[in-house]
Amino acid sequence: MRIAVNTRLLLKGKLEGIGWFTYQTLERIVRQHPEHEFFFFFDRPYDEQFIFAPNVTPVVVHPQARHPILFYLWFEWSVPAMLRKHKIDLFLSPDGYMSLSTKVPTCLVIHDLAFEHYPEHYVLSHKLYWRHYSPLFARKAKRIATVSTFSKDDIHRHYGVSKDVIDVVYNGAHDEYKPLDAAEREQIKQKYADGCEYFVFAGALHPRKNIVNLLKAFIAFKKRQKTNMKLVIVGRLAWKYEEVEEMQLTMPFKDEVKWVGYMNVDELSKVIGAAYALVYASLFEGFGIPILEALQCNVPAIVSNTSSMPEVAGEAALLVDPTDPEDIAAKMHILYKDESLRSRLVANASEQVKKFDWQGAADRLWTCMMKCVEK
Image (cartoon, rainbow, N blue to C red):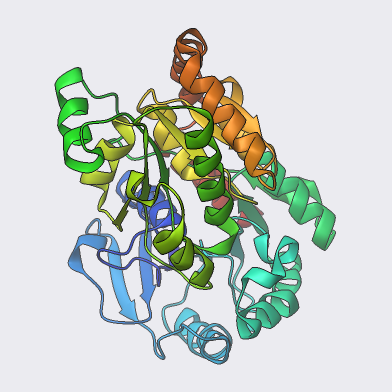
C-alpha cells in the first residue's frame, strides 16, 4: 500500500504538541510496516532525521502553508495533485487539516477544538478558516483519531460526527521524562531555581495556557506562605502576551519567578523531573502532554478541572478552577504543606502513566488508518 502523510509540522528544533505526536507515532509506524511505502509531504526543505526508514520517500510540496490562503492552496490544489502523481491509497493528516478535493481515503487526526471554545484567543484569519473548514474536514474524513475521550465527545457534539468513526489515540511522553535521583534534582535546582524547591509550568505562553492567573496564584501563595519556593516557567512567547510581559516586570515576587524560555527535551525533562509539582491551570486542552510528562517523572500535578485534563491526570493531581487564582493558590499551599498527600499523588502517578505510551499510540493510530481502507 502507498500511504501519504502530511508531515509539514516535522520541523527541526520546533517539535511541539502536534509535531511530537507526528514524530513519535510515525517513527514507529514506518519501521513496523516495511511492507508499505510512505510518502512524507513536507511544505519546505526537510531534515534527514525525519526520514525514519528506507520505505519513506520525502516529497516537498509547495507553497509553504502557514496562512489560511496558503492552507487552501496546499490542501486543495497541491496535495491532491501529489496524491494522484504518487498513486496514493491512503492519506494520513495528523494536524487536523485535510483535502476536500480528493477521493483518497483520509485518516484525520483532530487533537482538540480549542478554537470553538475560546475563539478570542486566536488570530481572526485562522479562526475563520478553522470554523468554516473543520466541520467539513471532520465530516469528509473516512475516520478520525483524537487524543482523549473528552475530545471524541467534543467532536461528536460540535460536528455531529458519529462516535463510531472516531478512535481515541492517547498521547505518550518522551522516554527522556523519568524520575531523577537526588543529586540530579539538586543540580537542576541550583541551575534554575537558586537551589530552592519550585513549581513548574511548561508550554507555549499563549492566552489559553492561563499564565496570568498562574502568576496571580503564585503571588497569593507567596503572600500566604513564607517560603523560598520558586516558580519556573518554561516556554516560548506565542501571541497576545502583553499582559504576561507587564506582570513579568511589575508583579510582586517577580524575582521568585524564573523565565527560562524554550528548551529541548533533554533539558526540559530534567527541569520537570526536579520540580516539586507541575502547575498546569490551562483553560482548555485536548490532552495536555506536559501533565503526562510530569507524572512520568513522578512529579505530582495541579491541573484544571476542565476538558481532558482530569482524564489525563487521574488520581495523580489536584484539580482547580482555572478561572480562580485563589483556588490555584490554595491547592499550591495544600500540596506544599502536606507531604503525605504529595507522596500519595506520586504513587498514583506511577500507576496513571501506564495508560499512556507512544507505542500504544502508534498501534492505535495504525488500527485507525487500516479501518479507512477496509473493504
